[in-house]
Length: 484
Image 1 (tube, rainbow, N blue to C red):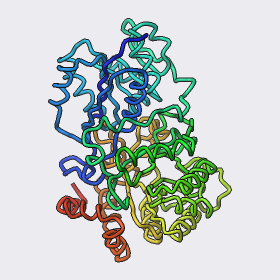
Image 2 (cartoon, rainbow, N blue to C red):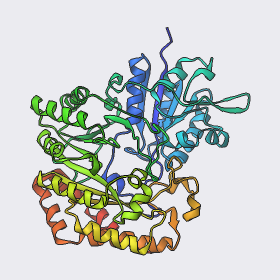
Image 3 (tube, rainbow, N blue to C red):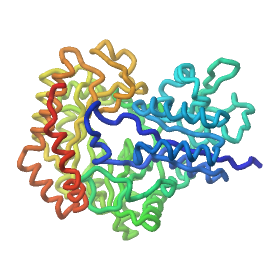
Image 4 (cartoon, helix red, strand yellow):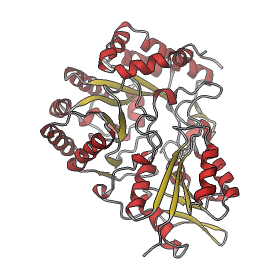
């Protein structure tokens, strides 16, 4: 019988916005750190004690962390970091090492999964790195008593001065064996967390994940954690999960944050039918690829309570789209943009809101491709729109060799899709910023878009309350200069 261990799980804040500008991401969206919450629930299942501190929801509270470390003296402290939050995690870990020298410092998440041994060589404060799915690797690590570390798959560690990676886990978890994430570990949940404004009808609401991985290899997506695997919860598990959130936390709406929710058609249809039969009134959002949708699925999604679907479109230039989505280059689909348009029309006919997700600054971007993207976006009946700034993350296929297509400033703290760290050939950073701002201003200044948001006064009254409370912040964002 392994003795119970005390584990502190930390989610560093890092940089999530543009330098010298007020961060509006915390105003617009604060999502629970689901990876850490799943890890907490898994460790508690095996008898260990866990606590979670989310620096993103409660920034500037470092002393609370340090006091906790002094008082509780955890056996291990586990950090889950993105690329942009990694160095903030290192800062916290360095101070914690001074307070409690003997505690094990563990880093997991996308950044260490992508760069692995390099990070342990460069940052000695890290004792262990977790590559890929973390639940079993962390459990085996904390129960190992420091013995037979070489048998723990997914672990990066040091042995006599050498950094060793034991290789990826060969057997991944069955998704339905996972306990529900430990939302109760979050301070102030659910009220201290919020979905993006105008993306839900009612509060309180939260985010869930019902699958892991993606079989596609789009050039811009980081696939370092789950690689090309794809696993999912059963429809029965999904319904129980949502019912649990409703009964325990009074959640009225969830955002299903799966990378590819609609990939397995039968799962989606069975889930919708189960939810309809249950009489559940909880609404939900999901993300979809239009080539996976059809009229039957869309109709069932609506009947089951789907309120909004986010569509990853990326660009309105068909050649650029095929270049960065490898599966389209071999597809029989003549014009993927026309397929996207047709599916959006079907979604709208069912009364489901549609959010278009685009990015600016892809390798191969030109003035003409930006013009085409604008024309395409403005021709679609979208209800909402997001334009991210292309970021070559270390786990994405484009990362290696990205400098062949432009200039790349690999400043991890700014690699957050809110800054142009990569500048395609033929552009300047100032020029891209101007295009980005023009894109947003033109989109949101159109009368039909403004009327759509006005309708949210009765469709999503909580969003309007938040909007008016933070109006000065939004106004500063829209009036910011296009050139720095």
